[in-house]
Length: 208
Image (tube, rainbow, N blue to C red; front, side, top):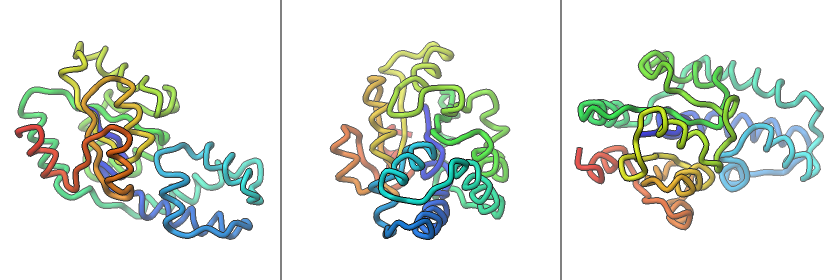
């Protein structure tokens, strides 16, 4: 079983999107909270940089590094786990299945969000980032995890909360469950995923 990180394991999307909204509007854009989801959720910060500049934002060349500094400072204050995700993790591990993490975020970001909850160490060696792999919607991270475990498509489940992420699962040919947190369920269903409203519902779908 492969999980996205932000918005699936940890509830970090809200704080990061609020910080991003404030930063971009201070650089000449006029965005609203709902624009964060439609424009940027599931992508990379480099993608945000390119798109915000194309929209007329006054972003300096080193904006990505500057924003990561602000983001890490905010995340170091702590973010909560997604409700019910520890129960789901325990139920999956009880079956003997391996859990992997596939994120478009950098390792440092995941260390900030996962380590306080013990998940960084728990998934040691099974955490993947776009720093080492092509970012989602490319299926590379999912395919790598499957190859390491020796699992085929019928034995693999992927959980993400964005249309971009779900597209990676669909491209990999695995069962893809979409946790409808920040992204409307209808958008996730259009991507070909199975939308759910809670981690308890994921357990139900999997019979755990």
